[in-house]
Image (cartoon, rainbow, N blue to C red; front, side, top):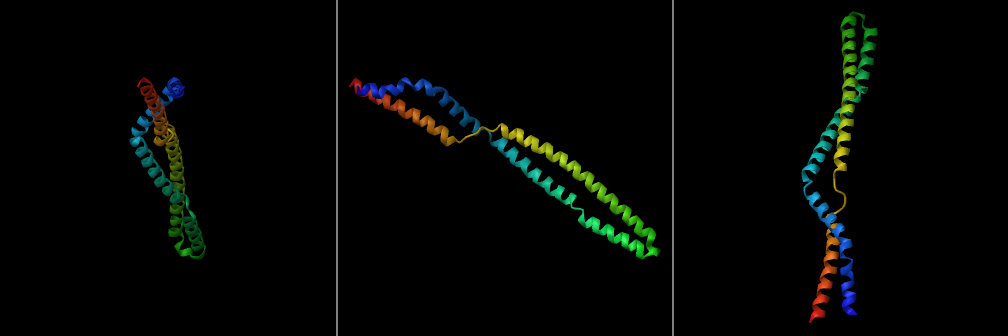
Length: 154
């Protein structure tokens, strides 16, 4: 009876086969993904740099305040009308360029974020420890069965 109890789990070992194989494949896959993780980290770094650039481009409060000061100066100083008008035109062009550049950066950031999402989907989920524990459990069942079989034969 003891041998039957010890050998019974052996009958179920084939049920664990696909799980053990999958666990080994996941471990192997995770070990080969270091370059992918480095690429993702690099792309995240570049995305953060673009975000900082976007923040700088979209903050036009300083430029707007300068424009208002220039317009007031135009009203107060008629003798400097031509020079002040040119400064106003230049500042407006800067604001327009900044907005256009900000839109370009937004488009690039969306594309980068989409690419990061695609790369993240390629990562194998889970932990090596969980898969190793599953393999170890099956190995213990196998070892127990072998010991029981050897004890039976003696």
